[in-house]
Amino acid sequence: MDPLPAFGLALIAISAVGIRFRISPFFTLVGGALFYGLLTGIPPDRIVAVMTAGIGKVFGLFAIIIFSGAVIAKLLEEQGQVSEIVSDIRKWLKTPAAISGFSGYLLALPVACSITAFIILEPIVGSLGNVESRRTWLSLAAIGSLISFALVYPTPVTIPLFESLTAGQSPITYDMIAVTLSLLLLAGILIFRPGAGRALPGEGDPPKEVESPVAGSGLFHARAWAPFAAIILAIPGGAALGLSTGSLIQVIMLAGAVTAMALAPPSVRLSGLHRGAKHAGVIIFDICGAGALAAVILESGFAGAALGGISAIAPLVIAPFILSALLQTAQGSRVVTAVISAEVLSGTAPAAALHPVALILMVVAGTFVFSYVTDPFFWIVKHATGNKYPEMISGYTLPVAACGLVIFCVALILQGLLL
Image (cartoon, rainbow, N blue to C red; front, top):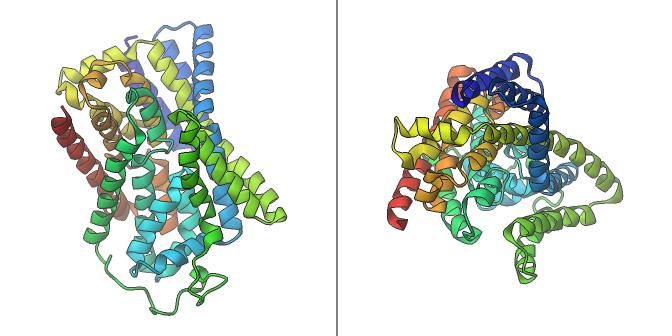
């Protein structure tokens, strides 16, 4: 079978099995890779060999980063330091909408996972208002974590895109644009969200869950922020050693994890390490499943067929956006979309025609476009908020889609300016 219809059938099978049985994405993606490979006529032994290579490549790229992020997250959580971080943020931001959005935005970066950041923040952000308002604040925390996770380098979404598509482009140049854009997007969501300007309940009397161990002292919780600081401070040291961008990411994340473990009490350190390893394992293997599918897709010659099909109905310059949007809509994971898009687009005509920054933003924009039932984050937010489908669409799907369209427009403008 030709790659395009085979790919369509494989994505339908992956989505149907994932939604119906709610099993680990690792199994649905690996199963999808086997199914797709057989449909396209790849010999079974070759399919397994290609899948194994794809899994190994992705594991090597993400294992240290995600494990370090998960350990940081669990150590912060077990010591109540996430509430201390939120307490510090409250000294600068006075509305629960801003606190929720920026807490999600900041925490998603060192823990290297938007879902992990949201789950950790859920009980704290949920305490900022009554039952009705907490739904809004939780949605904003989710969107904030998603914006930074999908846009700012380095995260599991941007790393594969940067590794495959930038050809030596400086991450500093990209992040100057990405961080500015992500903050503007978050500010726009907060401004236009109904009720976002509402003040905290009982201003001056913080909810118990957000109270810190030194509440009222006005002190900055340095220990809670130490892993963040270690990550940032390790950047110039790694650069001075002449580390490549890929190696530098591994080193700075390890620095953050080591700092978090060093500052934690021995009992918490052991528990956090075990819980972090368990959590990281689930995330890593899900992403490795994406690596298996991406490798088999490339083996089949899908890249040329897909881009040829897209270019027949749309300008080649927006092909990365369309490809990413289709992948995201079909299977829901932004990391999976990034991994597959990076592999498919590398060395192609659209990649050559677009400036690297504009190209990455095109792919990122596609990951925002349609976040609905195939998106695992959709279900997590729905369960946490108790919102029904119409409320989820208006409070999560549509704001996220609006962010995607803005990113797409910015990518087009940058392409025009950087030509």
